[in-house]
Image (cartoon, rainbow over all chains, first blue to last red; front, top):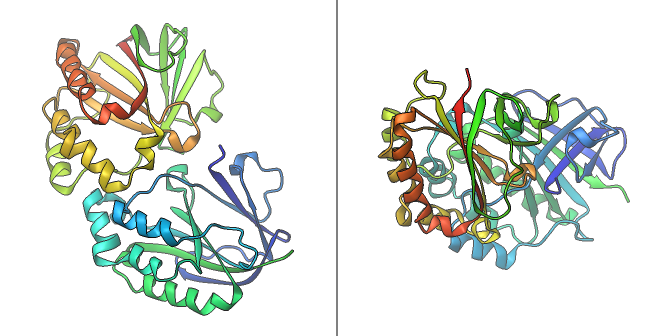
Length: 183
Length: 183
């Protein structure tokens, strides 16, 4: 399953934890480091203190116009200058998941401007979404961001804008873990 | 993972195979029966000749209006009269998955009338969609249908209408297995 990723929190890993803040719901046990492994959790030998897992998948909300804009400016993970990262697992409410596709799309973009906000921070902030609700995980998504340390303040602005949206009223658990590359 | 289901093809099971026809792509090995188990494939003891698995999930295309219509008339699985079933695994092309959400929605409903066609056959034909592309499975979906034997001809009409749509031009593998309840 090449699209499955595990995020192993423990006392060693490529990313050192610099802060961990719980914004909603239950916290995660404190860890010193996180390792990102391209495998499902079931395949891991070292499971650390906790493991979050998810899969990358097809686009769920973006329109053609939005995808063209995103693809024109976004950059990938593992850029040498991107020595800062954030791991932000999120869980949305049952009310969110009971909505129809057009209702979720309207909240996501027409009301909350999720993609439009994200576009303002490209290419500086690279991101990858991992889905995990369908795997019975404690979160619905594991979001991963990478950026150069000098863009930390821009990243904080991005999160502040997203957390003020209507969409975020449907977020019932959110933990914000900041990381620095070890190597 | 209570939303995960496995479909075990082999020489025993609650559903007897009455026919198996490949509409696109590679066939499945012939089996005499299918057992449906509410568990992921990794948890199975008896794996038969083959196992298909998938998870039920949130609605991906239907609008509020469509959901209201569907929920008003659809019936669930396991109705006593529904002694016929069909297991139809499907795989769509990479081109389908590269489309944006609005492009897929337009093909699914505005061009192909997927929900509108399905509505005409409710409540006679009960259905459950299982997603599996994100699990690295050989198919993208495992669709399951249940109906009374006297509605077999209506079910064939439903499939004929769907297979004639633009959406089906994106189907690259499809196997149609018909079943009769054993007990």
